Image 1 (cartoon, rainbow, N blue to C red):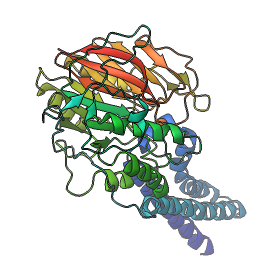
Image 2: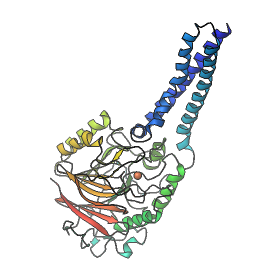
Image 3: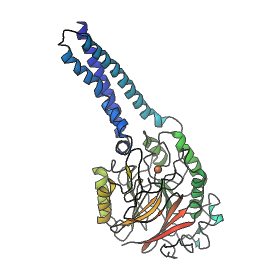
Image 4: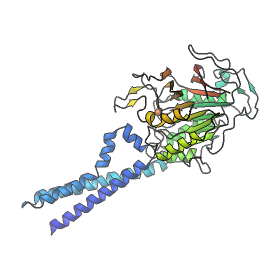
Length: 446
Ligand SMILES: [Fe+2]
């Protein structure tokens, strides 16, 4: 009788543990970036968190044949082990679930006091409004990096008259129809992030006065920590309060429920997008169409919905307007093999076969990403790729693998990328944190 009761107790506890573990894992893998972390990071730990739910019930099942023995001690001991394991698994599961739900919701975050771009609204170029420009200013002038600029100041003319890096393509001098800036991977909150580089870059972008500044992810080191977002917002609000700004969510921003913080800061009530998602959408910028993809690690978030939306968006785009795709993770890239995980941080084996055929088929002109902490320009099958993970996050080591698509690369430099949309070409200027041009490329669009 006692044995029967204990058998039932062990079975019930093992089912409770299995259920708690399943709910925790189900919630975790419903979060943005979690599946990517499973694939690209410490997989053994995440496998253990899944398998642990099966251990108590496995032990209970083992007791069934032992019951047939004359000696009851082995089955009794195993049942006790199962009950203890069930309690431990339940506690770990409930604790992790509480952390995932409450972690990102703890701590105050003020709504961003920034000139946020709502993806539902078109970006209006200052050139289209007929705002006068002057040609004397360079982004690397001391006056151009002296702090947040008033919107009333005339803008310096991009690219015109700037020193060209050896081997770079000669730049155009025509007034651009649209001026865009990009940078990525600032990692506010990380001790290793270079705060002075971040500040100089924001000051340079403020002085440059682009029509829009896209930040391509990894704003924070840990997206579930309100403090890291507040550090970022403090700098952004002080240095680029007037620059039209659109951040993309990176894998670090998404960590452990960070999507909750990302959405409440950068996709507040009233914002919407043509896809219905806050993570992927297209933006009409007049002289260019900008497509934002949800690619925090690889293709883990690139399901049928995003794929079909991307294909339809590309298919229906005006063939005369250049298409610029942005995402956190890259496609073609040079890099290195992660010594801890063995993962290749170069030519992305997930995104290249899954996404680049669409870029090539529908004539995407330029793809800009971060994730790797380098600056790089690459071309493959008629599509140009830029990587600009250089806004202060610790530099990646010198690459041990050079992508066959690579045309130019800067290692251990911080900076940003300006893209000027001219009548027939895109003018790309890679800059260091001082605003000095490191390299220029012209990308003709069809
Ligand atoms: Fe990063």
